[in-house]
Image 1 (cartoon, rainbow, N blue to C red):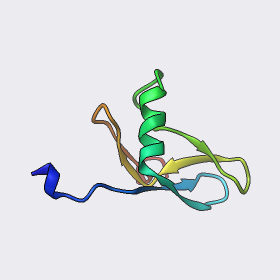
Image 2 (cartoon, helix red, strand yellow):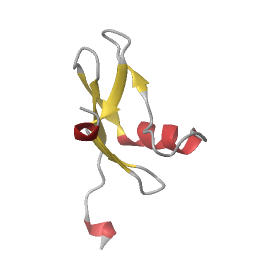
Image 3 (cartoon, rainbow, N blue to C red):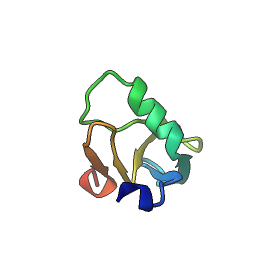
Length: 74
């Protein structure tokens, strides 16, 4: 039934410092997730273009099944 669900096109990221929001293409987030050989408990990370702070996903289910939620870090 997964093939019937529309694939997400963006992941909403939020800056933990200035609270800026950015939509990052899902395939970019997934590529970063695939390339990251580090700690699977941390999501793919990006830097805020406004302040340079750390961006965190509003919600993203990683390639290894781990779910990352902004509400868990706030």
